[in-house]
View 1: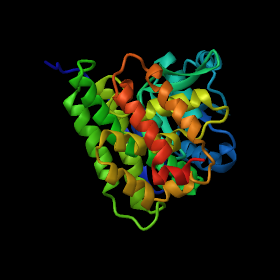
View 2: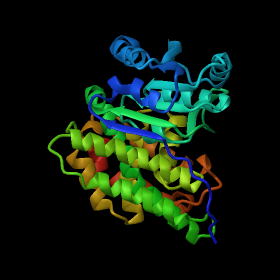
View 3: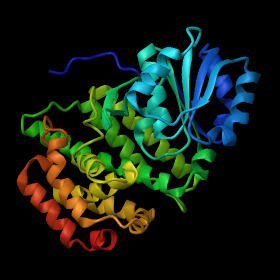
View 4: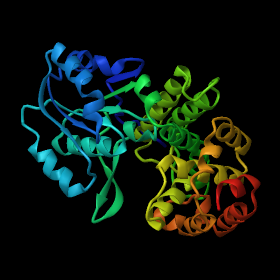
Length: 352
């Protein structure tokens, strides 16, 4: 029997055109009147003036304002305890690094965290964990679910297309992740939360059914960001990343360990999702259609990713999370995945 629990959800969720210029009024409405702001590399030049004007106009005091380019856990612990006691919130503006760092700093100081992603590369901006470097290794650590998520679709549109493709790859992965979770429960290795499944399923289905002419269409980007945000909520409901991260993520985590220079998380995950959807014999036509039509496969084919790395990553995948029981935790499905990497026409065009 599943028992109810208190679920955190963001108090502020603003996704649309021009939201960056309204950060001040959103913070004021939550009475977050003094904040520290961390921005990604080079972003002060791009967005600093607009954000500062919005905050000043709303009477928000900025206690600290700096660029941040580290996910070393020791650096972030130091940073967190340097945050002035007057701070009412931590605001991170930028990509995955600065979001993860700000999220963890806010968690350590028990402050509300405001997530302002400038790209749509993954669902990290809405999740309650942070990917940090611990003793030189990428490690997922508990953090804080965002009190507020503010996404300017105009900013997302101007980010390099690779970040949109990465977001697409991360979003379609919910299809295989959910199937892995159900498979896991059937093998007595986990308990599925039906409400978390429903939220994650609604998120991915809403996204894959969105009509679009271009991946830079306003509606497409809004659906992508909304769906990525809903994925973070599904994890919060489940109390784990199981609804949104399955065997396809284990392949990506293994690639991160194997490769000196891994590709963007969502790019690796998107290819692994295609592999696993075929192995699971589950919605692979839908996955393939999305990745083809958006241009994801065409982009991935320019990166020179190697078959051998994927073969090694498939073998290594179960050791990434030995306590899970995804399809890849069984040898027959690892063998099927490797056979696909070697023989599939689409993968033969993408992987060298």
